Image (cartoon, rainbow, N blue to C red; front, side, top):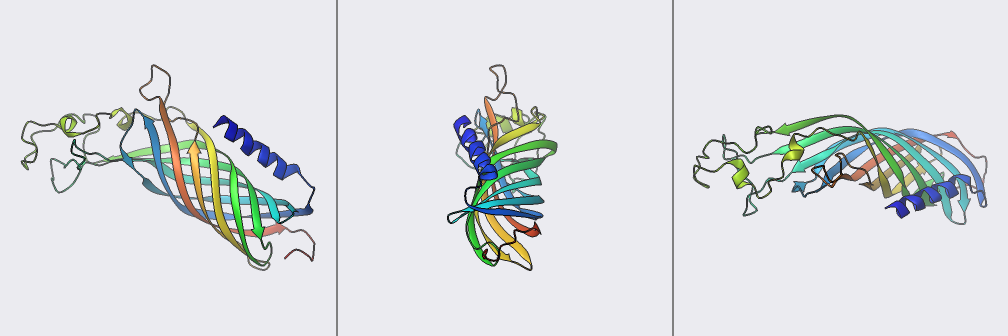
Length: 266
């Protein structure tokens, strides 16, 4: 991961400073929004499914040159994102554990967190710059700042082991939730976020449609791999790893602030 981070920073430096191709001084700004699916890679493992949330914010892009057929640019964003994890609470037979109060429902726990995320991405594009379609890729570092979080559950997370007799007859009357769950790792349900600063690597690919009068419209798929942990990871801590993984589908609209004067640019 350290080597990958070094490669990303080197690529960003080359894109932002190199001027050996056709010179550009294009600056475009705008907004973005989309849907993010997230989880946390806990070690010790916590069974999960992806948690859905929304993301949105501001985007700025500086295009510095066209090198052969590659259009080189740097993209920066400031986004609010709803991320976290959704626990998959199963019994020893890999079946959902029913809620005592209403056996038609299953035990549920979600942790929803709000982060300010700031990616700084090197961008390479191929295609039309002013009128038409362009394919592109993004790669670079991303940092994040914790804002707040909220837990959602249908059982008492402060005493997850206790439950009166489950009366639907499936497990018998003397079982408790802790006896039923295949995973007894529950510390994360009540632990506050310890590390408020997050960092990692983002990579994405997408398609852009540009019109010299109306601006730039983009759709992109992006993956973020966190290199930091939300909880401590020393030998004395409960988890040795607790990093984010995000899958993002987003749309972006940009309009030009500064545009290179060159009639050959299409």
